[in-house]
Image (tube, rainbow, N blue to C red; front, side, top):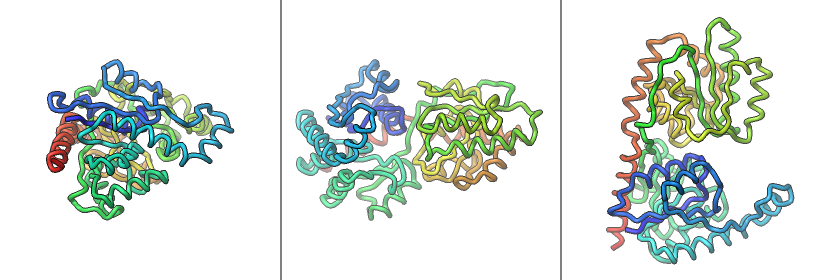
Length: 375
């Protein structure tokens, strides 16, 4: 069976990492898999890793101006729809060459829906975030609505919670919607005993991920009692990285906060930590939280979407942007070792349902069912 996966780029985001785990665990005796990247190469570590592991990846030409000058940004913004149409044309030509039996679209890989409608090839798209935050480009919305109208698309949510949101938002029923848990390689993660109690966040550093909330709550804990040794890892990079470094300086906690910058793998930092914090305003089903659970860490998370399926019994689920609630949860887990260990043990129990192998098996069953129904 010829499976084509379409995605905008293979950066270090959750969608690209999910594609990596999916393709890594697909049964190659049944499926021939090719990945089509609409925006071309990014040079990311994940992309290099996939190429080194001989993933079959096709990089399309990106029609947009690649320089980061103000002029190029303005041109790309003004002519975004035109550039989208050019990219869709490139994508459709490539799909005609590849002749897929089924297409699995991620992010604005949904553009493959235009080709899918014409050729009557089944299409499944994974919705990696809340539906109101997904498929925001004009071209995405148009093709999405066409796919729904012609009944040629299946929406896959990454959590039960997100499934209900998706069904309500796009007026779907069980025939054209399902959910498949995101998955990780659980065996990669472990906990190493250490002395200093350590909080950690692994994420893109931007306004949505809201690491400023973590810094403010951590600062309160530190000012309250500086005799207790504890620290914070902020693992990652992004638009807000320099602002967060400056905020830590202003709060007087620079010595206690370790900004790692971009890292290719978070395993080492998770193994050296005790408590994971997710402070997002919006979230689908966080792979970073799953990885922290696999490392045996209790979870403190804002109630930002699909993460409510992951946090609660194994930690604390708090309101979004609630500094007092975060401070209280951090203090309780820091000061209560028995609670911390019990919640971490619960994380390990819960994460067993989120293996990458299980995710791949579930998607493969959907692919076979859709192609079988088509024939």
